[in-house]
Length: 405
Ligand SMILES: Cc1cc2nc3c(=O)[nH]c(=O)nc-3n(C[C@H](O)[C@H](O)[C@H](O)COP(=O)(O)OP(=O)(O)OC[C@H]3O[C@@H](n4cnc5c(N)ncnc54)[C@H](O)[C@@H]3O)c2cc1C
Image (cartoon, rainbow, N blue to C red; front, side, top):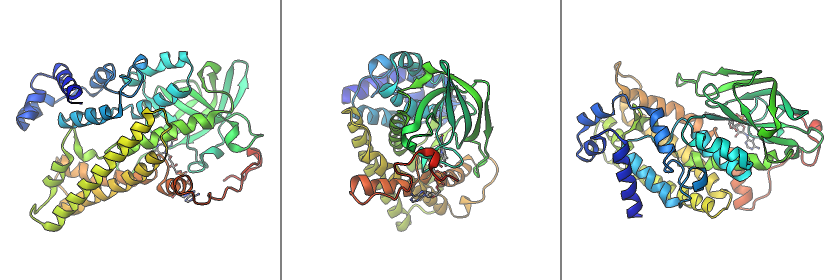
C-alpha cells in the first residue's frame, strides 16, 4: 500500500505545475493560490483519466488498473491532500455508464466508449426518470419501437443531470407494453446530438441548472447502440442504479471543500466559519461528524471490495447512500448554524460564505437523487432485514394495463 501511495504521489508531482505539491506540504497557501490559479479542470480530467488512476477498479484493457478497493481510498486521500478534485464532470460516465458497459456492453461498445468516458472527452448523462416515473422507475413510458435496424424513440425524461453538456445518455425505454413492467424495457446508448433530442435546463434553488427536461421526438437509435438484449433493460438498469448508490455514497457532495477546482480540507473549512473554536458543543459536533465520516468510509470500502469480488454492489451501497445523504445534510446544516449570522448574510466576494450556503441548499437534493431515502429504506427492509415486500398492485399484469399518473 505504501509503495502504491508513493508511486501515485511521484506521478502527481510529474503531472502538476512545479511547486504545487511543495506549496501544500510546506503550508504555503499564498504560493499555492498563485500556482493553482486558472487550474485547467478539463485538462486534468484527461491526464488522470488516461493514467488508470481515474478508475483503478476497471480492467486494465479498458483504462483502469485492474486494482483493488484500497487503491480507490488511497487515491482519494492523496487527491484530497493535494487539493485536487476527486471526481470530474463525468461522474455519471465513470461511476454509472462505465460499470454498466463493462458488465453488459458488447466488445465494440466497450472499446468505443470506455476510454473517452475516463478522459472526460465524452460526457454522459442518465435518461431514466420521467415526470410520472421516479421511485417506480420500471413503470416508465418512453417508447422505443423497432424500425429495420433502428429504434424510434418518443417520450420525455426529467431531472437529467448534465444533459445540456452530455455527448451520450444511458436511456431506458419501453420496447414491449404487453408484458409486465420490468420485462418490457430495453437499455440504449443515446447520442445526445441526434435530431429530435431537445434539452431544457431547469433552474434550482441554488441558482444553478444542474439538471434538465429532455424531450425525445422520433429520435432514431441504431440497434448497435442497444446495451444487452431486447427486454433485458431492467437488469442493465439495476447495474447502473447499484453503481449510482455506491458512487453517490462515496462523494462528499460538499462544495464548501472545493475552491476554484482545487479541494480544501473540509474540516478546515468548518473551523474557518466557527466564531468560537473553544465552544465545547461545537467541538463535540465536529468530532461526531468526523466519526460518522470514518464509518461511512469503511462501509464504502466494503462496497468497493464486494464490487471487486465480482458481486453486484447491493446492501452496502443502499445503506451508505441513505447515510451519506443524511450525513451531508447534517454537516452542511452544522456549517451554516455555526457561522451564526454569517451563515445567511455576507459581503460580496466572500466565496466561503457563499459556497457554504450553496452546499446547505444543494444538500436538500441528496435524499432524493439516486433513489429517495424512503425507497432505499424500503429496499433495506426487504433485502437485508427480510421484512415483507412493499405492496405492488401491478405485479404480473401487462404494463399497458397498469394504472399510471
Ligand atoms: C439533484 C437530482 C439529480 C437527479 N439526476 C437524475 C439523473 O441524472 N437522471 C435520472 O434519471 N434521474 C435523476 N434524478 C431523479 C431521481 O432519481 C428521482 O427524483 C427520484 O428517484 C424520486 O423520483 P420522483 O422525483 O419522481 O419522486 P416520486 O417517486 O414521485 O416520490 C415522491 C415522494 O414519495 C415517496 N415515495 C414514493 N414511493 C414510495 C413508496 N413505495 N414508499 C414510501 N415512499 C414512497 C418518495 O420517497 C418521495 O418522498 C435526480 C434527482 C435529483 C433531485
